[in-house]
Length: 409
Image (cartoon, rainbow, N blue to C red; front, side):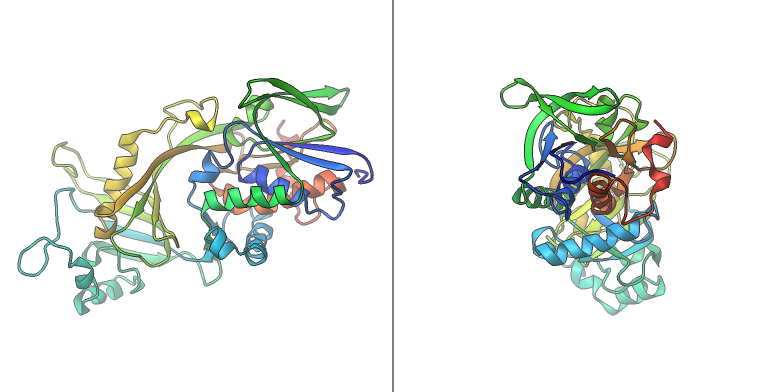
């Protein structure tokens, strides 16, 4: 077990949600004493510059791995209650379901009564006929921003209280600020190496983002939470990267709070300008409390992981595909304002499902990475147990021996 009375210089590598939650819980651990303990978080580009700022933000009790999800889901609710998360980062319970629908060709426009294509579609959706179609497809009646005649089925994926959401960028940046308020220091710079003395960590070297100067700072404990960039710091870490594209749309009117896992039948010649065969698209669609809708598509490995989050390449065609797919089943999304077209890289554990959390071999070295698409969901739980590893020598809040990095390094 670690001795809390010692001088401790704790360095966190990575300013995504895992690193920020680690800083938050380290500075709130009962043993943390700012007169004897320092917490420095080093981020290469900007806080929440990667997946932590561009994810969907779904929280679910049925997420994985099951040994950390319950703790993390509970901590999300506690954080929101303590710090005003409802207003600060959009925390709310949300409906979640799987939706099957038939998409329309891009050139197909719905006409209003009288034969004029217009803006009265939302009124039609609330008609007795439209509501009847929703009911026959077992679709909740307030999910009225999906075209009723295109629906094939709906199945709820959660009971009340089992799914919630946050705005990832606002959540991550807020947690970073809360960590700073308790004494954490956030530095922008690219970590080049971890120094060792025998079998223990001794220092961290990095290049300052603004000045370009090289620095080496002492470290008694190092938490590597660099997401898909983890292997650049720990070459033996089995962490790979998958690029994921997403868009943010401001619909033509506010829509009800649903997170949807879709299965959309895309018809032949979907885009009349490009002959094509029928296919199936599976975008995820998340309505947010700020009156925007987030949608993401499938991942790819076309472009290798760049040096930093600032260098991520966005494929405009992949973003447009997502826009076209979700617009094929919703007028509100098709005719809405496109607020963002973006991409990020998700960290995966190459040898098994993620993440890897805990001691990483050398004394004072810890790994917290490989959270796949559940990084936002599992970040508070990860940060909590990392604080326990550092100050107590072991995880106390959850039984996570199966996530031990030493099993794979």
